Image (tube, rainbow, N blue to C red; front, side, top):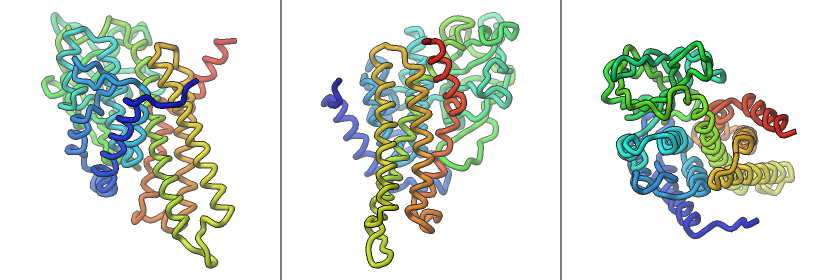
Length: 382
């Protein structure tokens, strides 16, 4: 067992950390206040290879491993959780299925722009009545000659208001339930019948757009089917497993920001004639946060290593996402407590971390679903 990072992994971690500290952290609070899409930052992230970390260079990616993805995601999310989830969706939910299930032509045409940072991708799965249960999906795709005709509304789609491309899940045979779901690649800027619907006002990750995707007799080419008809659900499961590694990394980044700020504040805030860091009650909070964050990171790196080495990682990804997101939320509550009244005020970033942390327990599968995934794997293994 080797815990030492390779030189390449150290390099991308250091690059992501310096970029995040220099370009993202100073504007994170303003991005949160304005709800503005960080277009310039995302463009720079693309130029640095952060939007297609594990994608092969011939398709615009950086050609790095999944450990590097986790390390860089943590650094970006530590500075701004919104930038982190934009990056995660492109890498995990768009790049992954196109690179793993797409044809050579699809990769060249639809993967290269996103992996290379020229455009953003999104993943169209969730609907108002079909979140944890995709079999209830109402969006349909019907083959009409050389085109698929798509009708339906996707809900809560990260990057949906700014993405150029989408991997879309739709039912091609409702009578088959899960087995009747297929995946498609949609060029959102060149698809008649598509429009962006409501852009949500949210509790946190405010610089990340969350939108409805509305399809009304939208037509896409027949060859934009991803894989084969009826393979969408299987593709969805593996895609979401990787997505959970991304969200676990985002949660760790948020938690790291909480810990760093709580430590610094505790050294300067004085009560009863000495800094509050001298009090055991505060020391124990900091120690518990640090310990749980390290545990979350180990779980996440394990899942990433399994993915990189072609091993099964469904259970491990669910564990990482469950523990990391619960830890981030708990740590943020503790962080607010360490800062006291200041932690509740927008003059300090701690309240933003609390708002941003909550969503990590919900998207990419709620933590209730994560527990079901873990239990299913445990019971199957016995």
